[in-house]
Image 1 (cartoon, rainbow, N blue to C red):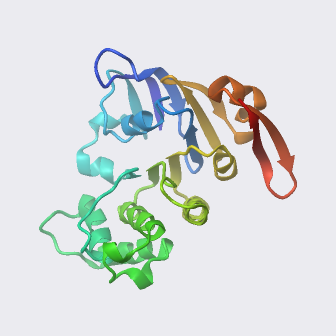
Image 2 (cartoon, rainbow, N blue to C red):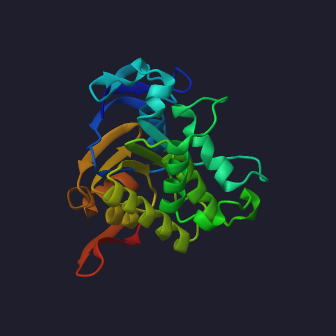
Length: 256
């Protein structure tokens, strides 16, 4: 996937994205980072066709994404949004089954292929034993895994996640990121996600895009991108970037 000269504005006055370019590498985890309001979620929205850019184009498999039919595009890319909602009394298995709609239709019964996809998604997210539970009975971390399962059941090669660790405590944050890593390593999914926590981005990313004020200002591997100079320039904070034999590269804030 490539995006070329992308501009976008919510109010047609101020550009939220300013002619940006970039590439999403197949089979890798790409993380978008940057300060609040820098355009991270907006870029994800353009790449997932939720927003139509005022200029530029997004190319997927050699074809502009606007040229795909809705169901065709939904078989290419699945999205886990930052905010999700569903009836609290719906069962997990029923909710996840709706992810098969791009392959079926509202009035088609589930076939064996669909049941296999549902079982696979529930297994990947460790929700097999929760399949008959209602959404209201789950913890916050379990609910987040349900939304991932709902996306996985689409059986797409690309998965987008907008701040997947938001509202989760540290245990469930790491559980979610380990799940995302597993989906990439074990199942070969191309992952694009938005994160705020820099050390998590370092640990769980192959590529990082750094955004500021609607522009992609840096991109590369964590070791190439995460520097003391970048952190001061983009976030306005002084940090020490260290290398640890066990933890790898990590950032230690020391002041503003």
